[in-house]
Image (cartoon, rainbow, N blue to C red; front, side, top):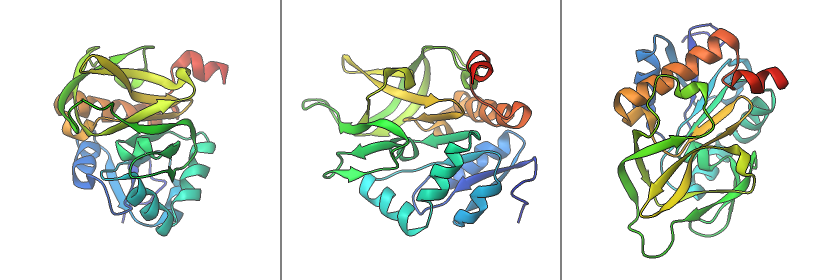
Length: 224
């Protein structure tokens, strides 16, 4: 097994629900070695961390708790190291999810996960555009309003609008499709299923994490 603190190793959390092979292939495509692990103690020495995910909020939080990942993920994010959450890995960052009831999540970002309004076709599935505002270095070289792949029936409703990095239009309304702050970024879409745009996204995330230890915009990192 690759050393966690190797400068070529990217840690991917395996809690029983995620597009792990696709994410691992995207990391390998960027020239790094993916370390898919169900061992929460390995997070402590990681220099970058990816939490992917598919499924429902209740199952996600049950599996993260049962696997012993909740506190290590919170501690990792609090340490200021680069973090990427994907789909359920994004939704789990908020205070709670209304999917299938009321489910407490990681509480890293203020807000909740809500269902699309009645009348909209769910899941929102397929290719859609992502509008980035403000600019973010993880999207360097990716056209604004570029296409990414989505599969979801619930979306984030943040309490703090400043954490919204990207938005997507669906049937006349807009929802946050990229959120983050400091050294953390998370997407509702699946970059690993999003062709060249998604591969560039992963490559940018890893390169920034490795080369400068920060994925934040330089003006934000300088002011931290």
